[in-house]
Amino acid sequence: MAEKPDTPRQSDGPSAPGAQHLLVRLLQEFTLEANRYVDSAGGRNDMHRTDLNALAAVMRHAANGDVVTPGTLRKELNLSSPATTALVDRLCGSGHLVRVREGQDRRQVQLRMTDKAYRDGSAMFLPLARRMDSAMAGFTVQELETAARFMDAMIAATVQASQEASGAP
View (cartoon, rainbow, N blue to C red):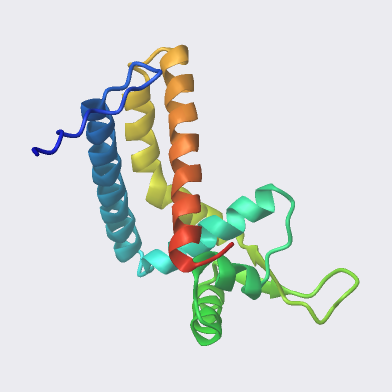
């Protein structure tokens, strides 16, 4: 008896499987190009991608009012303790981070970005921001809101897949 061919999955929305595959491919291309940009911009400033990822993490946590410790970076960037120490030493040595001891538990080392980190980050990413602003200018507010919802969903899906891949609950 011949097997039945797989039938395409029906969708409640306007996305067809072909459109979904196209979007996944475009997300992959975007990720690749974003990584290339980070490597190029960081390389011109003698910074590794991990350095820039660490600064982005510190900036994001600081914007939320969260305390950032070396342990925070270790977990977020999936680094070993020695690699985290080397990373923090490198960023402190380059003038991008400072270690501070504040609050009730003065044994805890907190990490803060310096003005130099903000200046260097702005200089590195201003060209990308200008190009992205220009590209977004061709879209309506509703289209950008839909794109933002889509990206939020893709980020959440990626986080969940990463947790599954690592065996995390």
